[in-house]
Image (cartoon, rainbow, N blue to C red; front, side):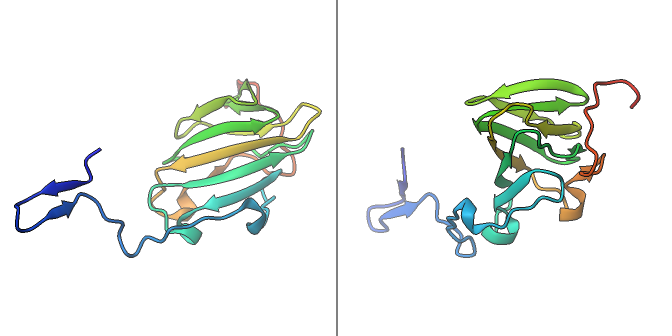
Length: 158
């Protein structure tokens, strides 16, 4: 890897890249982030524009106990990467159930209605990353059902 470019013998190497001074280095542990349960199971957004000054997306972890789920929603501007670190989940994508087990990843394209459910007997831990960011935070997430009554949509009717 090249990390310097010679411009002249007198001038010395020129750095190819420098971290902007307004971009902090940020490390968090999930225990430092309060759990958010507004949409069902537990979500912790670990790195985001709010706490890490990220400009391209955000990263978090979701924990679903057996029988828990997240209300169906979609992201108009962002694709979502899901990685199942522990357990198994069912991800309903536009009403079609997809089984995703430990060590598996799933890409949810922008505009895809999705919901996560833990139908198994063990807790599940899912790492998620979304990007790019919506133009404004309130435009990034659209709920299509309430967390109080998430029911599987197996297609049709929408």
